[in-house]
Length: 562
Image (cartoon, rainbow, N blue to C red; front, side, top):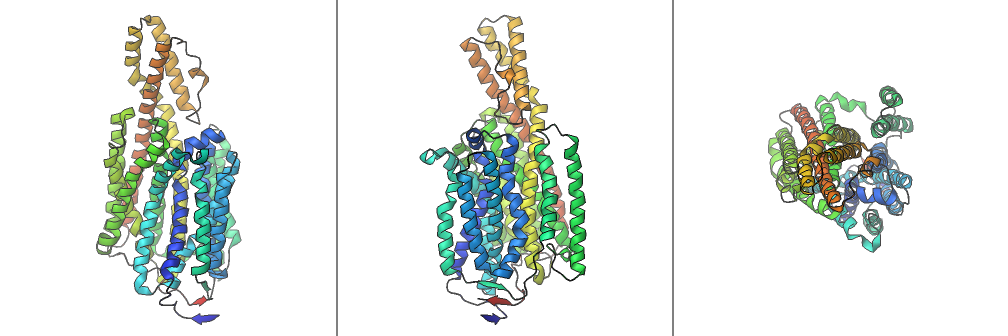
């Protein structure tokens, strides 16, 4: 064992090792969104309630956020290679458990485990950049990492759609998890041979009490948001959210006590002495609330509202990925180093413009909305997303001293995951509340056509009134269901028995459903656009001179290389 003040300058295997951890990081980020497009298939196969589907999505990001900072510390203490190998092995096993799950509860538990193991892998990526690359190569490595992170979310939707539609070996949705097994095994073997190990010469201590308090505060907030609508918002849901605030306050007080005692808090509160970083972190959280909600309602609209197959929905999302890649490449490669915070603000405004355009077009085209008509709003939305995601990490890290960059990057990654989880919960509530409230819009849109068709079938006006009233009750009750796939009793008792009349009502129901989903989609996207305007104001608080500095962990204390 040797001690060296600087990391090795030219490990010949450094790019191979970086490729291995980058593939693992991509696999981790992919699994944040790959589930969204498979939700209808999971629901049908496991007979899951909608609240359980939300937990299948949110469990991963919550566990990831909860363990992320501790995962980085474990690497400092026990060695980055050892912790990375533990993480990728656990992630692979958890992926197998997800793919083999036989009920929603098992799948939710496996997703928690998957997220926790991912949180052991990902913090080691920046550490590998630090310990294996000379300073002049770190900018290139960070640019690659940022680009991969910016595109993984959209690629997850496209890949998920292809895998579900392909129905490999009759496994339906399960390959979206099982595909991680060969990738994880190959990554584990490659990392074993090409990664060098390192640890911090002065590693911080673990903070298990702080971690428990932080996890408790998040769960006490997210649980009632996820379950409240299904249970008609009982008083305990609001009480639980109040307790969440109290626990969070207790967490901050405990962390301050550790700081005053000279011990190692889970969160270095000294980082918040930098006002631009503190505002930037809050802004980053808001951005991911908006985007986490978008990825959820986007797939709901395409599959639940328009009735598209998983493959069509997934391949359509590739247009977003193209826009994200273009935006990320342009911002990191050309714009951010010159224009700094203005690139982030421009990216957010472009993203918000894409949301607004998408919302308007959804209402305009309704059930006739095609993939190619979605191309323009998806490219605009993706470009804005890429312009924000790719350079933000470096720009915000530039607001803290280099020695604190490790803790700051952990907080930024945690903020991203928490924002995604909160976005799923909050936007899920908004989407289905609007869907129930405005269900009459779809009925009003199709009633003239129903009456015209019934008149052609020589149905008397009094019977038409009865049929239309039953149809309206069916549409309303279906919109009010916690799970949009559930068929309420009112939809099973319509007096129409003639096949021609049944066909008319079936077609009208499809159209009314598309109209209602488009309206809910519009509301939630406009909510997201409004939140993005707040994000723009937050980025405005960054210093005018903030530039893309690519200085991740440059002045970290000495590293012990094993």
